[in-house]
Image (cartoon, rainbow, N blue to C red):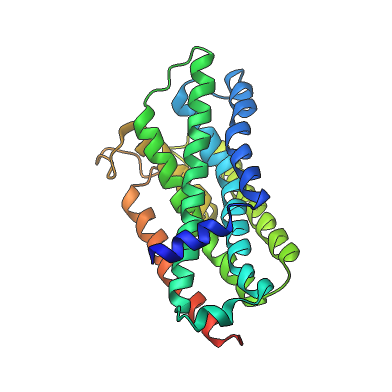
Length: 266
């Protein structure tokens, strides 16, 4: 398995997309942080990281990063016609899927963590202390993991359609836009109530994946606790249910990817 993962990483070594992703992770948070510090937040590092990872970069960019990585990795064998050679090694399709998805998860987690580090560096240079740093860094890693799982249905759709790379990338971008629309729709819904804690949970928007991450982030990043206290408002979400949902998506979508790949002609 380690050799398969290394091969998938090596495929991305000379890919311009990796450089663009690294630049986006480092540069996008800087103007977003500077603008946010001038209004819209209280200026604290926790608020800035929350804004970036749950409202701006998280729902919009992470699905695009994960989806495009998957497109590049899964389409390589088809475009280069190397899958038949891999089967003669032999290499199981299930092992290939696991290795490719590991790289997708790794890319999303690293993107999220690097973005958080860019926010920390920018806020520190402007005189805002980066605290609580380690709980926010752990929260950023989990955000990357969560959104990688949320992108799996999109990856499954791309594999099922089996279209060209350009159309597949476009679908990933549209999926990221759809995630952002859900976030802003949820924010509009919450704005109509007295406070976030008082927002009714009977709307489907409050249970969409981006809003679940939104409801979870502040409680975990501020405390570092996976399970919140009993006196916490129902609006806020524990880490365990979100982890369970992500693992369920991983098992279901991963299994369907394996079945789909085995039925395709080589």
